[in-house]
Length: 175
Image (tube, rainbow, N blue to C red; front, side, top):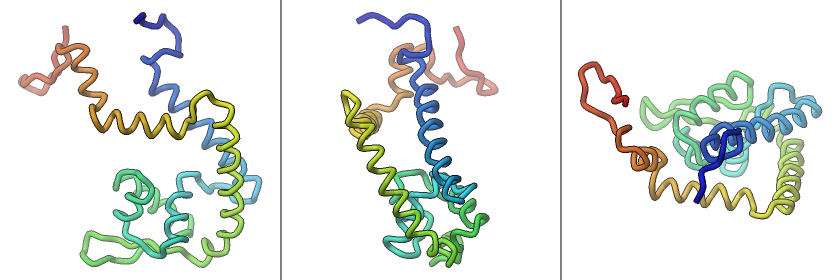
């Protein structure tokens, strides 16, 4: 197996290429929102709003689980949604828990958002039909592979010199 030569297309640039792909996808969806008069509406709001629309008020933890993101990511997204007037936040069962619910403004937007969500799903299906391997399947397969063996482990297996060392001041080992 040969190692790809220089250039931004080999496995060494995987993270960079994935960020570029996300930027393209999110940018185009954001442009649709702006065209609908929803400037400032962010594509990352969609999984949270869909979950709240389908199941009603939910804790940040439940929203994170439903969206498949970390608690921190869900908390940041919900906080921004609250600033944008889309959700309310109320105390949960204990002092640390917050429960999000849709505002009347968000409820008013749901028919338009549902139409956009359906159109985006159709566009994504059309895009996947053009690919030799469905992107959604590739993402799921990749996430499962990383659950089995994280990238950090793969990196240090490729070069054990990169394993953390107990050094004064926490200085990483360098060759």
